[in-house]
Image (cartoon, rainbow, N blue to C red):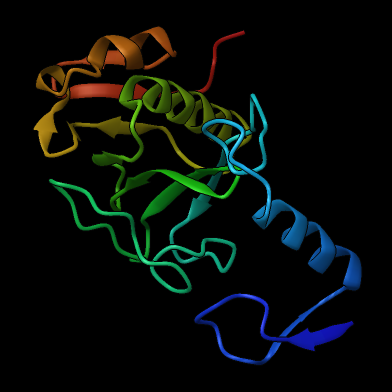
Length: 165
């Protein structure tokens, strides 16, 4: 284990192995290879509680700017990450979804898929999303994308359930 100042802004009490440090330095010096920092073409989205220590947003990293929302590390809130990139934030109860990133449709599809998997695995209960990015689901421009990704239309928005066998 090595101790050092590896990540700017986090203080000097940082520890890692020499191999990890070499990988991070090599990655930091490489040009971006697409949307994902690692150069992955199809990263696996991860659903976490917003308060989970594995979620760096709102603690180590600032939340990305968003026109219509102010996400928080509140109890019951959920985040969806892929390759370390914040894809979405759901408020407690899952009724309000904030989508991050330039390609909202691709991101929304990834988020719905990840949430359906989390429900199927029993890690969370089904959700009813009523708002996306400050608008009702039907007005958000993402309703069709969410339905195509497996969400189910309801009178108040969309429901995210486990995939049916």
